[in-house]
Image: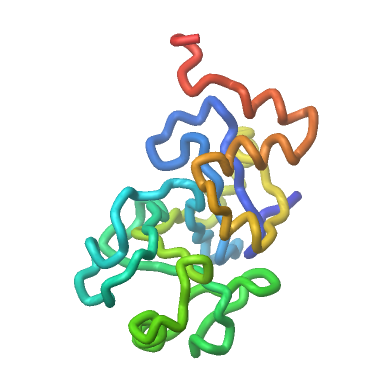
Length: 183
């Protein structure tokens, strides 16, 4: 399967990069000339959004590590559609970005729940051709994405759950120890 906006990248078990080890990345933009942008879905930060971004209304929204690029910027995925002007639909029912002030207003009015939005600090980025090289090196598996995958309630288990869903060829990876030397 080829990478494109709305697809997932699942890292192979031996990938030891701090950000991408056992990572599941949603591709939000992909172009041969522009490169690729993605958000890591399964790396929660154990802080709440308003603890990091002081301008945000007091809330209980979780925060995720989206990737190593621009760790000083906030990105978000949501299921709010037209309620957030300027949003881009990635897959059916899942949107990226839009007017942040409108989202803050809806949160402040308690019209948005944590089940409807995922916030990320930073993003994952690949220069043109870089992701294809990494795919050639078998660093990633490309697969379909569903809304429930992105809004997973147990993101820490997402990597192993996705591998099991891919079938017997990959299910063995799900049990691969994080550090084989300690096995």
